[in-house]
Image 1 (spheres, rainbow, N blue to C red):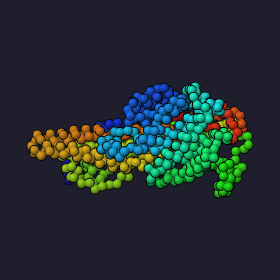
Image 2: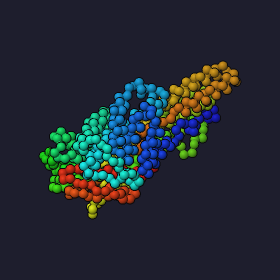
Image 3: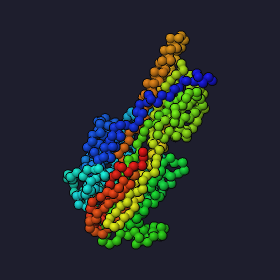
Image 4: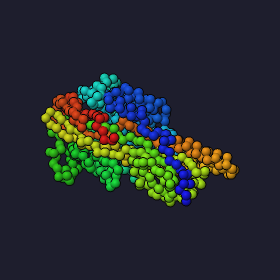
Length: 533
């Protein structure tokens, strides 16, 4: 076959729609980083508008932006609106999914991913816990978003602290009993099908209750959540660190903090099982039991931003053309895929198919030219996270540990979905181009110079228009943190000054009032501590 003749499929990435990350998304994240909360919310509104298809992601983004600004009531308003949309999106009809596949993945309502769905309820739980603690004067942060964040907004809640605590428990039950169960059922064989940290926070919500408010059902719930959390941590440490996994999973197989909460709860709730678990770990009750007259402070450091999807540009060419510098090229017979963008090396794992060049020429590019390309969402290559933050109370300093690696969940979820996305998109592109080529052949069948030239132009222009419709769906909850780190401190009753030192320096969290036998949750977000470039 003559290579000069095989100019049938010419990659032209410049014609692809959305050839870089959204500038509005970048602006929103930059505004969050610099504590410009009002601007960040306005940018989120501008980014998603009032389109019903964007309602879920709009509520997610604005809800978290308000949380970071200390407006916990405003955050709950948005996240409460997002919760039923999560349920609705999980029940999307088959017809909607098929319609999206035929036209473009970007068309249609934002569905969200399983790990994002869980985070809606996670932040609802956290908002209610923090509101209850502010109403009780247990902890009011000097500012919410360090180092440039605003002071928390005044509390305007019409609820009592006990009401917020109970609503936190209700949201925790929904998150773990409903959402995570649905995720497990819907994601067989996927690496993300559970969230041990969500279960850990659900148990912690029970520990924040005064002992007089805890029911037997609450205690059973906490025990089940902690047991499942430890099992899931162990499984994820295996599944998300397997050989050739192209990202880092930062959480341990059994975080010390999770183990302490688990054993401590068992000592109170099921002493016999506690003794068995202590013996299995060669530990004693004295090592984990909360000393009399003391309470605990759980310091949560939400760090950085989760990796956001960017367009992986794929052009289809034929043997004989010059490949772009720095692109990954994969040959299937005499057809070449040119892949450019973050994570382009994924193309090296594609299964090669023996595709005859003549067949492709006849089917897709009669007349000798077509511009065919499409996009898939992808993430930039992963890099190691900074060392976890250190927590200081008085003269005591404790290293925190990674409890939730959202970045790994995002990467694993997208990687697991990419083969299906690639196949569906490729079939859609070929079907569109076959229609364009069919029209070209009808014109060329007149077999005269004018018809040949017109057929050539129809196929070329049609393929350009078809390619321009194939933009990747880059919608995601971009203000989520990269990871959540935690430290558990046992402190005597009274007020204590807490300082958290991240890779960018120390942060004063103000005074925390410790109540014997109860847990107080302290939450910090430092957007400057980032893993993903």
